[in-house]
Image (cartoon, rainbow, N blue to C red):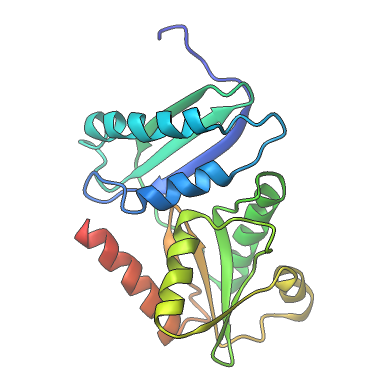
Length: 209
């Protein structure tokens, strides 16, 4: 183990913890299995290893950071490592700041078919999800999608939404980011009752874990 080292990262996951546990464990593992790489390093045995190693890592690593972040790194040869670190809140929360994070995450989705952070917009009581039908949802996004359906909200995937917002502006009632690491993050300048409701539901899940 002393000589173990990772090569070029192929997949990096950062998952929020609460009270030394991983609230969205099954959703995160499902999204991990859905990730695609050119050399197919995400295999069924690797996902099984991640599930088993998660128990050991949380038992040993959450004493110092029980509400921290679980990080999983898989390199291009299929070797993996897992660790726990401190959680740091986002400090730039404007709609434009969240747009930039979603754009960066979109680049990851184009190669792996899963985006760890995606932008959501409320417009005329319709929830627009800035994603493609070609992508699989990350753990936190799958939770928000299920919550929206439970609340009876209409959800539409919009692959071109990020590009339109970039060129035409938001033209939205509410804007929020959904992130595996940060949860539901309403825009500081375009928040509202729906975004706050999703945030409250996510934080309630954390507190109950």
